[in-house]
Image 1 (tube, rainbow, N blue to C red):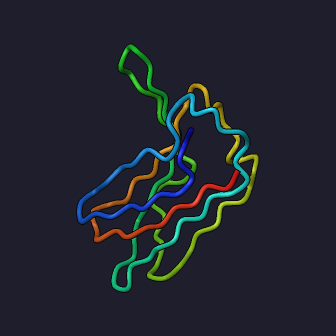
Image 2 (image 1 turned 90 degrees about the vertical axis):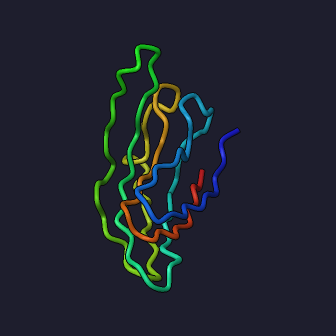
Length: 108
């Protein structure tokens, strides 16, 4: 089963898989991304990506390079935006090269 709670910590550009392709997750109601850092803003991108056997991946961004200031939480609660083919695509988040300290919660 897919994990709904994630922490992203890093000082270099980091990508983590939030939900793998074929994760058998139902509808996603919302996602919160909280910047838990006391010092740095974080620039993040959220995207879906497939993992075909050919190796040529398709990537589609839900948002790209959004700056989340220190102590701020971004709430994504538009269910149509979060509705994608979860059999074919996985959900990923990327934080740019800063001292990222993000808490991610996926509500389904």
